Image (cartoon, rainbow over all chains, first blue to last red; front, side):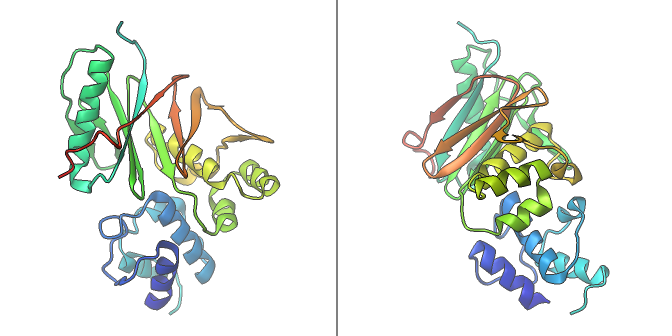
Amino acid sequence: MLDVIKAIIEDITGRKNITIETDFIKDLELSSFDIVNIISAVEERFNISIPTRDIWNIHQVKDAINYLREHGVQE
Amino acid sequence: MACRSKVSLYLYSGVMQEQRDTLIIKCAEDFQHACQLPVRLPEIVRKPGIKPHFDDDRLFFNLTHSHDLWICAISTEPVGIDLELPRSCRMELVAKRFFHSDEYRYLLQDDFRSFFTIWCAKESYVKYLGTGIDDEFKNFHVTDQHTLAKQLNGCFLHHFQVDDYCGCLCTPLPFYQLLDRRTTYENRD
């Protein structure tokens, strides 16, 4: 799951060296649009719908992974 | 002559994150001078879940940045602003997920050329409200069937362009001024 999410972030932002600790705002300085773009791709890839209010609780890559696992997404 | 209601956009480039608050205050000071308002340097109040604001309820600000450009809007009225550099992305996927059906239909007719124009208008509106992007983001539209809306719930949606960037300013005021400070800002270091 980590590799898939890393690939999505790298594809959308062009940023490399993404780790499980990477913070979307503090480390990558992503805009709201970048984050929305990433979430849309994650939703499509893992066939899940993330309520918009939950998006802003996902700060780091590990938050995204935890969210997906908690909502039944398999590795 | 002192102005009663006004909004000014201060455009800069190369602003570092740590310089941000200093520059916001500098913009506020400039605005107060230009409007012949009593000059009092405001403090920026940041609290979780609340839109950042001045400790002076007669003065408002909002920020946006994209890549190298940075705009600070200062106004006598609440204000929201967004700036984006149009770029390749999965527009149809994002539009289906986050845009109102009226906006999506507009983009289908428009071959998605106005995708970032619509995004900027929507984000400037929620930044004006102070709500951010929440579940209501999909429930309002900045299109009016076959045209881009110029107003929304009593606010003007001022679309603008800077170089290759597109932006939108949301304000109750019908006019604004854009002040290009890219060549005059020399205190970055």
